[in-house]
Length: 430
Image (cartoon, rainbow, N blue to C red; front, side, top):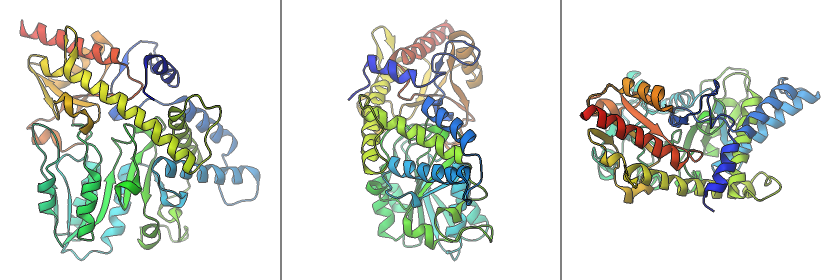
């Protein structure tokens, strides 16, 4: 199944603010990398959980039992999204940053200070700072960054392999660069990590909305993502290999549970967070079979439907990426706009190697001035910052302009951005 125009209309009806912002202004929302719009199913589930299951867990009355069940069901939904199997493999947290710090602290307790950690050159600082801190505390000797091709944005896998040795304790990589869109070959990296007995960790925050994420196929020990990057609310989730959930020792409050994901979680859980993510994941299952009258049962059935839905998303978004690079008719793509520098892959034949994330600079324009112009004149919501990424500095830049598409964006919205950039570039040239 592909997202044809008729079905795309139904998809957009699932997102209350997709056509206009809260003031009623019609616009194209292309800042999805900073946080997607909220799906109505996620919103409805969250509201009901806040009203019906507002009590704390651990008691015998109805609201408490309802809160417990909501949390369990949310964990199972995330397990289905990631093909992780059981809900006990899913840990929740305030953010992906908090979860990676918690994980790095636990791993740090096992280290001697002689080990190293290997990551990529295009990471978000969420997957850098926790490992820098281990070095600052003398728990690792070195944090090593694998190079990426500055022209294509693709990871130099041979360089990464060369940085891994017998003292490598952790290999931790992003599934896709949040600025370049470049996908990492996770299965190949997993093999390299396992050859030296290192933990393999994946930051899937930027990629999770763009295609299937299967922790069993990847072969990772842990993987994190955030709900607000997946059509839900803030709050994040971490898959951990079942034995690691038990064997690693996180920092925790003394009286909190000693086993299961609860031992990793700081403070009382927000049941509405789990309800929201289950709603978003059921939406993805709907994408996998929109003609079905009922939701699939939790577990393998839902996991298969979610995967099918995200495969459709991936296919559709590759078409958006190709359109952005090539253009259409008399509208040049990013590759043909005078004075525009695009960062990351520019090859329309290699859209399978990238998510639909496009970072660029336009000669003669400050990035924030350009973003404001695109909003004020063309009603295009777009970002201009450093995105907490290592990448801008590697190109001697402080910021970049970034457009990030997801599957509810239309080809017309892509063309509106291309037309605006072509027009702005032409005026600057004159």
